[in-house]
Amino acid sequence: MKTNRRTLRYEFFIAKRFVSGSGNKDKVSGPIVKIAVASVMLSVVVMLLSVAAGKGMQAKIREKVAVFSGHALILPYNNNHSQLTLEPVKLRQNFYPGYHNLPDVAHISPFATIGGILKKGNDFEGIIFKGVDSTYDWHLFRPYLKQGKIPVFHKHKTNDSILISKYLAERLRLKTGDKVRAYFLRRGSDKPLVRRFFIGGIYETDFEDYDKNYIIGDLNQVRRLYHWSDSLTGGFEVLYRHFDRMEQNTAALNEQLDPMLIALSLRDLNPYLFDWLDMFDFNIYIIIFILLIVSALSMSTVMLVMITERIRHIGILRTLGATDLSVMGIFLLKALWFVATGLILGNLLALGIIFLQNRYGIISLNPEVYYVKKAPLLISLKQLLILDIGVMVLIGLLMILPAKIVSAIKPGEVLKWD
Image (tube, helix red, strand yellow):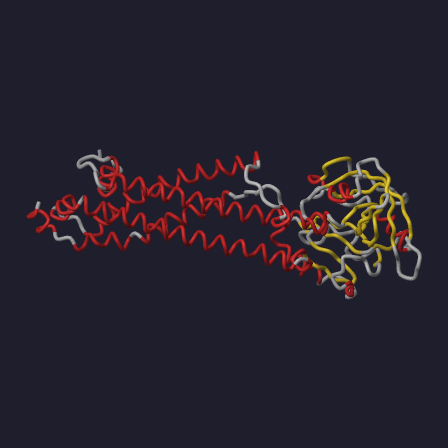
């Protein structure tokens, strides 16, 4: 009775013997191999941390911008990207309150803004009052609330509670529970309108453009200041289910809007910020490219040293009938084994650093420049696998050229000299 047995190709067998050190001791290549493995390991660590830092910064900054603008805003067409509401729109629209049939739209809520001055004693600060109602989705904002609690707003009742930033609280020496006066001007009125508010909570995003300006309160307060009815609002804030499809979703939303309204995505509202974030990807590609070249050169050096050191074995294998391709395969397999060792060690070290940074915030940044206090590191399993597979494949391809030196070795001369 015949049985089929899986046989191991001799290239794998010999490569394994070389890696394990059987036969000749690799006196020359041993230290060089260790240096090359360390080089691959450190290159992988830097590549993974570069990707994690870039993606983490992008995700965190986008999240902070979305806290105050959602993923898109629906505004009057002639609003001209103003942070302040220039004219109202009707609350009831063909997309609101029945927005659940819109593709990829998770939530829509009305809002309006008005400029003013917050004053306590002799201290004052210019502010933008953002009014929201009971339908507002707080899940993006909640992680940045440092003190107090989020106020509860009602449809037919005005709430005097507001949320201010830690920056404004420190500048005006305010704390939760304090009362503060605010002064507003509206078109057609020479006298400022005075309102007294109650500090319900204090937030901090480290995003100066917002922390220095925004306070959040009841939409009914803005309506009263503008003399609007309950049927009017300043615009609508939109949240999508998938952030990466923001541009496509906003374009699709614009096709369904009244001609007098326009939907603007976060990128439309903050073009320079998103251009800066896009540069992270370019820098990551440059770093990965340089480190791949360094790793490939170090492993190519190891390849040449291994071939030189094992030249007698090459002569014997060629005499026994091994083809150039087979002998090349042996050394490529041996080199790729060392690359894989560096990859595994690099992955473990990088993932350990990412865990420690996200847990303890060891690496600090200047929030005035980077909008975050602690460097956020974020990498997905997909990105990890793509990087690892890419390193293995590209270094393997780049090592084929030095491996071809095997074909120039003449077994007769090698054995005669030996």
